[in-house]
Image (cartoon, rainbow, N blue to C red; front, side, top):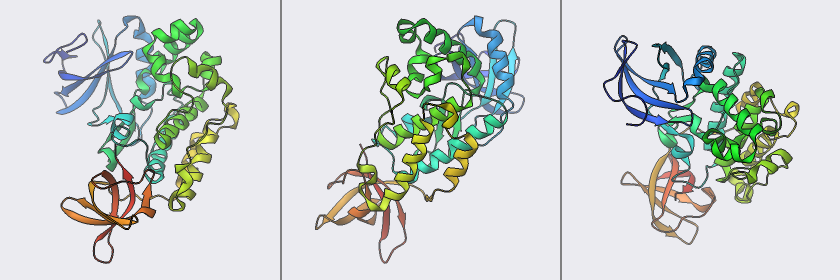
Length: 355
């Protein structure tokens, strides 16, 4: 197990380490058992002992945020040697690993639903006066995969720590940026002002980050690239282009265009012209998207190059190519879909080809 602890270690006389639950650039993360309330929790401790004061301040600040789309801060422990932030344990996966491993991009129905949840979580934090500063896919947890049982923004508890490391790395220039795991991971989602004036980052920088993440979910790529070459493009903030497949199918074009416009508003260079998190919630609330369950299946039959059947749990589901988003599947391809009652077989909408 990486980090300062092993399974069985007892923290604060209450939290028993069960195992490693991940590792960020700034902290170790463990699954632990709370012996008082008889539940499992996430236990986080900073790697850098010099971050003690910032870690405590961040823990106090993060506890202000209470919302279903934000990981709840439960406790803070200082045993004199290390500091620990106790959060609810989310039995899920990072946003990109949960959704962009098996599909190259998401359809607009699923993307709109995610956008809405992220906006609501962000609005709750901003109402509490908390700026995240380090929003990126690894700080968003998804349970249930494509079913989206839960979407939660995490690591508000290290906001101050991340803010300081990002500021120091950016002010140090290219070599410092490359050496910082925190900045390298955050860079594709950083607002221009987070690079130009890193100590003056406000709520609108979080909105930019949400927009950058949504661009990636919709297109499969980050808006301005990765690594140091992205810096000049982010600062210039020219509106990114969107692939033609998003609006090529009339079935999906209306919602895709609406999402494109909201994302472009988030990625405005001038922070004052970006929507607030509250405005994002309102805009996403006006989008029309279904919330039916998603299923995985394979294409069993295609007829007349126009329609066919997908097998889902040993049952046929009818699909038409007009209901396919993105690349058209071929015989034997794995696909993701929602299904609805039809005359005879179930009917699929949308159908998305898997990797």
